[in-house]
Image (cartoon, rainbow over all chains, first blue to last red; front, side, top):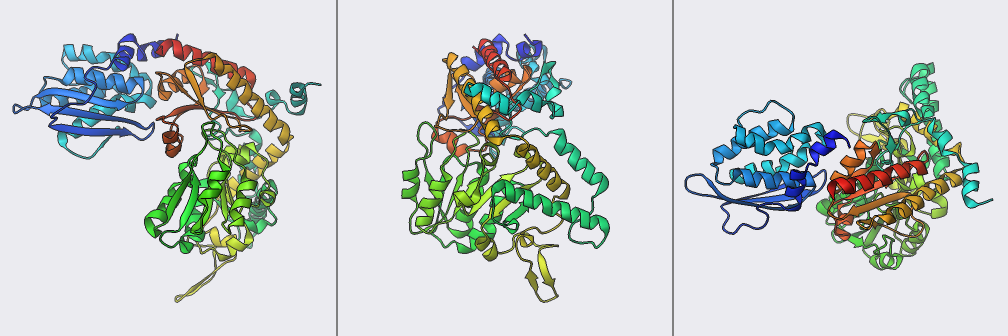
Length: 151
Length: 414
């Protein structure tokens, strides 16, 4: 099989997409945002509870999409829960570097290892937007701004 | 002689493939299997050569100069108009307006014909399988003039319910706007019947023929539609050119669309008078080289027995339709009788974009997404579909490659 396909659709990704973590509605969310990829019609809602220390106490997502977008959202929620808002945004910066095949900045070794399963997206430029949708949506939820588009 | 061998003797797709330089490309080391023809068709060298030859030897602006080349270019541009007229079996060349594509042609009708005739509450009747280009211009009329959009559903097999359409046409209906062939389902609509029903109530019909002109032989006089829209790039021609056919009586009363050069009779400081159709609707320098390319594309299509070409395309559809039956995880959307060679499907637990990515790595180009037909996606309860759309140069062997790639996708995505 094509190695880049194997890399893209590795077991961890498929497992996250078929059994997404933190999937569902979050009661008492303090922040919530909606993301939309107009190219494929995929939609995602990210809901967060940010406590008084600016820490993400809980996060959930809902939505429909391809394996890449679902796995990415699942992985993101797993990664950012318990982190501060500033840390989550730093993680996002590193994640974007990773999936665009750029030099990765701002990820420590553990986070890098955890998110590295998404690095295969770098070989599929047409699919980068799928991987970044949940992250852009998380950011827009935290900023309370307009619905996110994964540009 | 069997039906199959008759088709083979009348049209040879393998020989035609040699006309298309891009078809010998390798994609990720695999032979290209191009099944995204509904989005845009590839170009034969006859089209590419005609455009290059014209630009190399006879090019200038049209209608403006008195010099030799301007005359040559004008002749070529007007000859292309007559080619489109003949292709659509229109009664007169002045009933053909060149546009930059199908989208502009529909927007032209919406702005120049429909908008001045719409009072708040007036209705436009549409089918749910329209492409966004035959929806959004009518939404403009809803937003700007208070028009009401009345939607006609399709049956579960994707066929249009003519009785439902007839029932939707009421005393306030100003236009029926309907596709000839659905870009997602492949459904061919009974345009002649639609026009007869609408005309019985005094309502004109616009047909979006962007797919229809490819997969059907179009006779606008026989169909008796009021407006028929086509685009060049799906007809093996260049991008940047399309055409509107409109009955003379409609063109005569349509207000200008874009203002500029070539569409005027006289301009003074105080006033302007307008040229007769079709020039009235062709402001600015038109797509001249593209018109030559479009004419060459129509010549190319007419160099074959088109009935045999269509039979070949439908044979591919039937072969692919039969082939996907082996996949119990795959659901075909659109099985209307007599449909054109477009196959859309949804796969259990597999998103269209994941499928299309895996097919792509096998060299198979298909479309995945909502196909600019979101109301139709909603009708069938799907966010997106995967679509294989066939052209004259596709073969059964390519369908086999697609089927094998689908099986592989299933293995990977499970």
